[in-house]
Length: 314
Ligand SMILES: C[S@@+](CC[C@H](N)C(=O)[O-])C[C@H]1O[C@@H](n2cnc3c(N)ncnc32)[C@H](O)[C@@H]1O
Image (cartoon, rainbow, N blue to C red; front, side, top):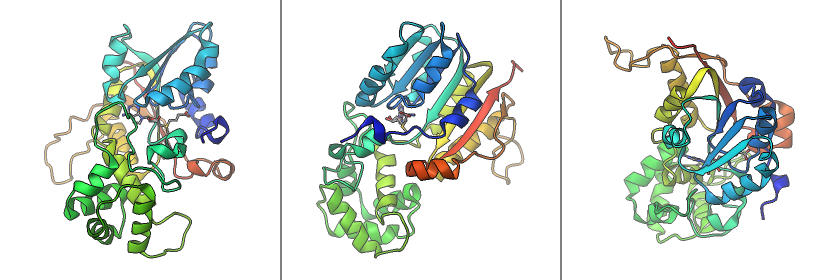
């Protein structure tokens, strides 16, 4: 059972220092989740500001709505059930041509991980689902595990899980189908990989890979970050928190291209990527949570924080 105490927003101090929300400004929390960051941003926009919170998980929006209600007398709070890849449409539907700040806190929320029945975690036994938006007719983790070929599963676990034992795991899955529950899958993966030392469960990377595929988390991520920079007013800021190297790579490439650095392969003679200078990167090296935060909130341990500021029109 998820309680508000078990949810701790990540790198709040750094996020606020980088975003610098001011009274009267308009901010987007593109992954509002349980509103952990939004409840810190909102009071800084008072009086007269506007916070637009987006999430694809209707249950997260219910929680965020309850937590953000306290600010609705002093500012506008709008919560939208949408995919952040549709940010320009979400803003234009509300008559917003540009905003002062945008936050992305990518990945899965503690409520999703801690809700046993949603099948995100091997800590509970539940049907293999993993959809962030159960109201959408998307594929479930069970459908991937039971229908994809061994080669497709191996590639998935290798690429999205960065799992060295992907071939062994894919083979074990295909040999033991049908697989319906999180614990069936977790124990099968543990057996295939063999016990390894270390703090993380042997099935962690396989579960990550399935979650990324079910929710198409990496599809269009670089483009989503780039188009949100187009939604910033001059001087507006974007902050992105990532939790694994594949997300981080998409953000780095977006920031690199829009700070005018070519991201074409080195063999290309002529630049094809259309790099243009629209932003100034505020974090030449990603920021990481300090030791005290990691001790207090182990889920923050893999976080990286990157930020950029939109230049005056160039
Ligand atoms: C790490 S949580 C955010 C937690 C939030 N910052 C807080 O402190 O409460 C990430 C959230 O982003 C949502 N999400 C992930 N991908 C999304 C997408 N493409 N569009 C909209 N929401 C998305 C998830 O449903 C989840 O609620």
